[in-house]
Amino acid sequence: MWLFVVVAIGLWLVLERSTLGRAIYLIGSNERATGYSGINTRRVLVWVYVISALLCAVAAFLMMSKLNSAKASYGESYLLTYILAVVLGGVNPDGGSGKIVGMVLALILLQTIESGFNIMGVSPYLTLALWGLCCCVSLARKGNWGLTRRNHGPVADSLPSATGVSAAVIWPRYYLMQSPPDGIARRR
Image 1 (cartoon, one colour):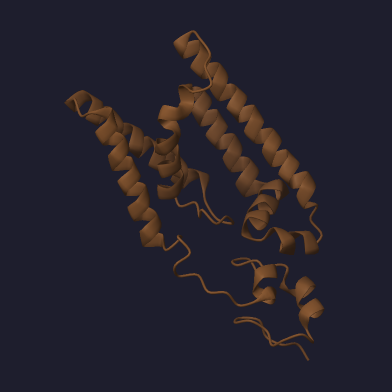
Image 2: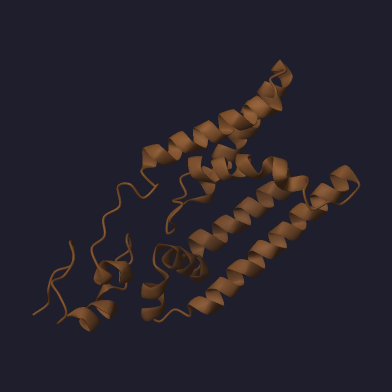
């Protein structure tokens, strides 16, 4: 339990209190716009993969110590639970937004419910079906299946959706090509 708390606090500090975390959110929102604003996206993505690999290694060592053996498929039973925790925790599947606190609270809630199902004798297959249904309902409620997304053309594709940080850097490139998208005022 203490390792979970340490990792959660460490990730919160990285994502919320560092320039690396801000760059990760910007890349998740729009990688091309982030590159145009002067952030080295390749370096940030390398750090993201390094942190992810280290956390996977820690998880693998914990699973090996728990089960006294190693097998690549040991984590498959947790996959849907973690995807649902991420979705319920407020992370946008398209990228660019999400909070560690929401994911931790959703994970604690799901583990508590799953433990209650185990105590009541509910089938694990029924639990997985319930998690899948919850994930589908949550994604449909958020409208993240691409059914409600509007396309504003190449300018909007190159602008970050939520931050607006790089609009001044990218806008002059398209200034003469077409009218600005919603929310961007034409400079004179």
